[in-house]
Amino acid sequence: MRRHEPLAGRRALLMAIDCAMAAAVGWILGRHGTGSAQSSASWCMALISCAILSLLGAYHDVMERPGSWHRYCSAVAAAAAGVGLLGVVAAWHLGISRATVVLGSAVLFVGLRVTRSVLVFLHHKLLPTKTLWVIAESSAEARRLAEKVRSAESRFEVRRSSTLPADEELSEAIADFDAVLCTPAVRAEVEAGCRAANRELLIVPEVEQIRTVSARTKMFDDLAVLSLPKEGGGRTEAVLQRSSDIAAAALIGIVMLPVMAMIALLVWMDSAGGVLFRQERRGLDGKKFEMLKFRTMIAGAENASGAVLASSEDRRITRAGRWLRSTRLDELPQLWNVIRGDMRLVGPRPEREELARGIEEKVPDFCLRTMVKPGLTGLAQVYGSYTTSAEDKLRLDVLYITKASLRLDLQIMLMTLRVALQRERARGVPVSPILELTVPSHTAIDKRQNA
Image (tube, rainbow, N blue to C red; front, top):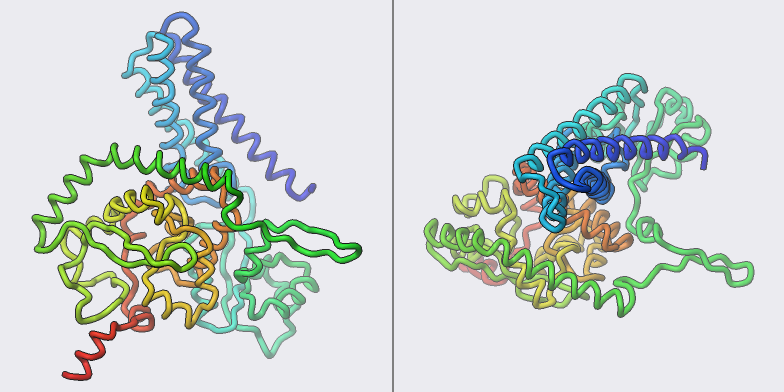
């Protein structure tokens, strides 16, 4: 327990600073109002901003987060506090003008952002960077993992990436680093070396290890067993999930209706073909359903090629489609799939049958994603991209299935907006993975044989 006390203390200190800052901003805004405006505005700004920051996970691994993460969390918290205060002002007639509230939200955003910037700067200046050795079963995999660590802007500095060394004592080599990151294939040897050298060990988990994260221990006499909870929860939880999905999807659909009408007009004017694109996808327990999207490719794009993943420079994508894909707005028609019950707002993204079979040949556990309903967005969409490997997507999806909760769903939905604003996250896969995962249709095969 003592190992986590300093970290918990930092989170509590940061939350106290945020609450005090938001309360101060609210108190100043309340001076322009009437009656109990100061105390009401102070409490409202503090509670809403800290609640949103906590929901977004802004107090977890604060020092390891990139600057874009802190900017987004601060902006959402400040905006939510402003909107909440406007509601309180209107309900209780506190007499604070809208312009004053908007100015207060802007000041709160700057304060939250500056606080985090200062803390992260001091953290990186006062605490040394940890040297890391990445070890995998192949040099290519080691380099891939090393690149992910470098791109994450963490306190770990990759000094070496390789396979298991054969010509040196592993524990002596590990002693030159602060930590080691390894894959499951080499875990046993690396773990023994880390124990001997007393070094930190980071492990890329296997899917089965992730599934046991939420397992409970049960005892049968002197036999200890792990109990994995039933996926999807009980009947009450299922009813609550279904009700919240319908309500949220309907509300989002109504708000976004003008946007969807403009998108439909843009798609219709940009290229010949229908506005909507219907595609068969895998759903709960592998059952197929028809998923809706705004069309982003030329009509009949897969008549000759069969089912293939879109590449970053795919010529089949229309001009409007490229923009829709970069903003993820092409997925909006799936709100109807959510209302129909084919999908949920949050869950693993549904895959096409042909591509799923091709992936399962290399990743047999990929079918575990169908244990729950697919979603419009998910953990793999928040932390991954179109180029994320099938193995990494599976780990993220199984992690969501294991730790699914209403709080996690809300957090993912809030973070989806941030992903939609990052166009580089929506690029297609490189050419080589397409060739590996391409599963031509029977029609395409017949055409090639007759050619």
